[in-house]
Length: 75
Image (tube, rainbow, N blue to C red; front, side, top):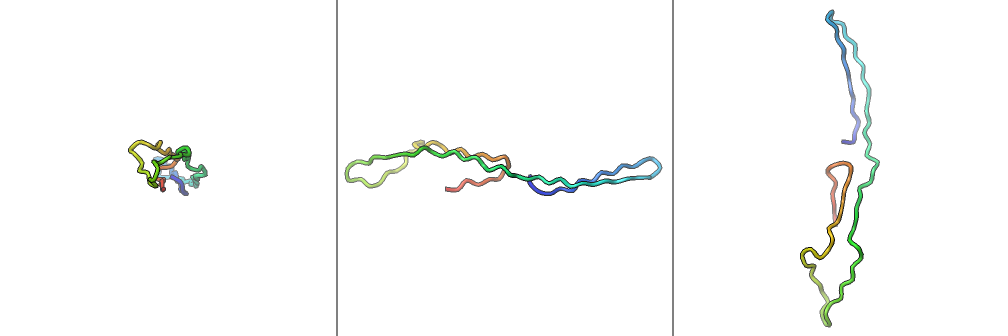
């Protein structure tokens, strides 16, 4: 998940001595989501008819993928 993470290690010996070190990891998401849309579509209606209902399965499904979970697809 993108964000900043602090990592800390500790080493200890049997005599009770210890040492620690820490570092920061920054995870960035610079990749845009991929969106593949339906090809352009022309619908000819019957004479005198000005509307068209989309039959189930008439349009190709959109493809949306991202390298991180939780993206939204809005129309």
